[in-house]
Image (cartoon, rainbow, N blue to C red):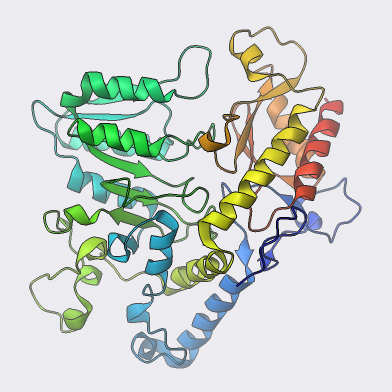
Length: 443
């Protein structure tokens, strides 16, 4: 097991490969060959040495064994069973039984598969309840699913927005709409953590209320998986989908995953069958009739990319050895709270309640639109730059890169910074805050 350390200047794991200042264009840093300050795990996690090693092993075996590697594998990882080590680790990360999860596909593809199975509108119950500013790919999926059922998205989709002058949704407002519109809602689907603001939605209470109202409840966990503790089985979530290249560090475009609660395993069989969802015992006999694997894994269609699976497995092994989500969450809370404390000391910081009810900010500054309550956020802090629409964000972002700080910009005014517990330190948080202060002096 990796040595857990409460000391925030000691990474939980030294296995990750961090880009150098010279590689990311940090022109103001003299230590060109030192590691940059990478606070972008909410967008793309870093490569671990473990993942690199496993991928290289599979490449060597591909070269030495060719197609034989599907059944005879020198490291006892035959490609026909390449996900077998991944599934129990994914189940532990999301709080599920192994048969409730599957490593497959891509995020939006999996979302469509789940919606096609679970969104079953009737004349009385046909609406989709979601957040107004969900990630665009989700919004496209919701709209296209409504249209596919012959519905008008304008009336079929209920989109909840924050109250005027606020940036995040209130739990009571979501529950109130569920009480009011519940009998007309077929599907409730939110992101576990909102990609733009970093808000962690109260998943347990929303799921409970949705089920009480007779709605199906699903979640997009792209920014939540590997970031915050999840208990999908115990919360009675119907389905969930996620990508793995953010906090689970599987690599750009890495293989995704989905969850289907065991309550549905006997009644909700895969509608779009594929051979990889067929039971392994007879899969290669090529029978004419589809016999799905029990549970979520029956939703598989094509064989997964072995290299992508190996990369995910390597990172999940690191997560497991680090103590899984309890240990990561403890360190994440420490790091995110520390970053926030450094940022709010800045002379350019404006409390969010001042920004919410006034637009009269002539001088450059910033606020934090992510909730201050730790239980309502993960690792990410979203900084909104002022005056909005002025181009300040882009200038600050470029200045941070020159200082060796990699965050994530969201046009037109937000920079997201995420101290990731597996490889970030207190020094990273300090350097980011100091660099931000200097960046304002260049405006």
